[in-house]
Amino acid sequence: MAVLVGKKAPLFEADAVVNGGEFVEKFSLEQYIGKKHVVFFFYPLDFTFVCPTEIIAFQDKMEEFDKRNVAVVGCSVDSKFSHWAWLNTPKNNGGIEGVKFPLVSDLSKTISENYDVLAGEYDYNEEGEMEFNGDAVAYRGLFLIDKQGVVRHQVVNDLPLGRSVNETLRMVDALQFFEDNGEVCPADWHAGDDAMVADAAGVADYLSKH
Image 1 (cartoon, rainbow, N blue to C red):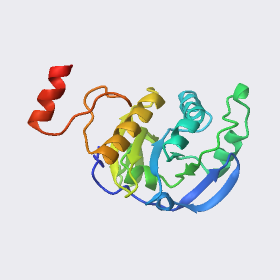
Image 2 (cartoon, helix red, strand yellow):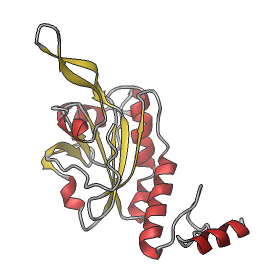
Image 3 (spheres, rainbow, N blue to C red):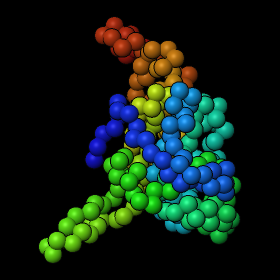
Image 4 (cartoon, rainbow, N blue to C red):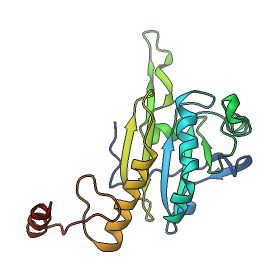
């Protein structure tokens, strides 16, 4: 699996559904470059089980992401019409009604491939016919992208394992603290904790206090 940290996030243009029900053509992360940090995350499929818990958890924390000037964008291999239907299905019927951040349609699976989170691959069988081996959905990949469009953090979970939205916010805080102050963030750092200067003296000073 590719490590994209330190590299430019792969850009794309794709159909998306925004604001809970509006179709957008040629949606792109490029619109955020120079303006916002981005949390771009993949989930396997609409109308499933772990996925709505994650998506709703992100929506529940949108005020916190907004405070930090962070755009949240989801993506799966479903069509824009599937996204729209799910967004307009009440939560008590398995839907995600009330979610407002963009959901991108990766129907061609090229975005998942470019971010290297596709849970399978195309190959040729013994008869020379192309077939897909594995699950034709995305793993639970998440990428924190800075304002220059560079990936600064990534995590990829297997299909059954839901992610922590609070941990995502912690990583946003750590990145923004480093960008603003130049100090680095030690293990289990949270906003308001001591950071440290990235040299031998700084490490020694930090460890002596903790």
